[in-house]
Length: 123
Image 1 (cartoon, rainbow, N blue to C red):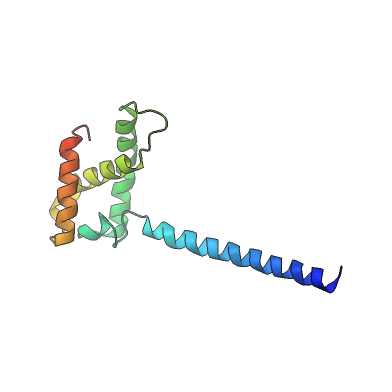
Image 2: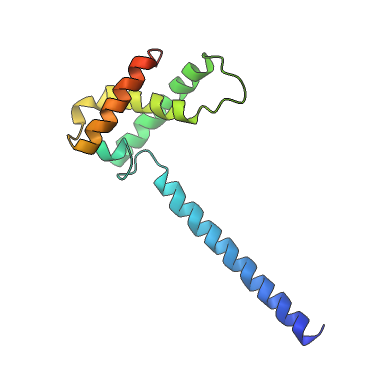
């Protein structure tokens, strides 16, 4: 192998490792942002409740929401993530409505949730 080829191989290995590290860091940071119990997202930011309790409640509503969505007989290509999120938020609010934070941003979220409930009475 020539010196240039060795340099090219070494540079490729370093770039590959850097890419893996960047992807890992990005995945870790984005997974935290996606948690509904994160204090920067609804419902985590709009209730006076410990994160662990929030996580347990969201997990307990998971099966019930999945069953409700399954009973809708939606086509296979239909994305159900937003429905699942609102279903879990609705069940969460029914349990912890007395722990709501009264801020303008949270009141807007609560109003949107109430409107969703009215248009989706099966949940």
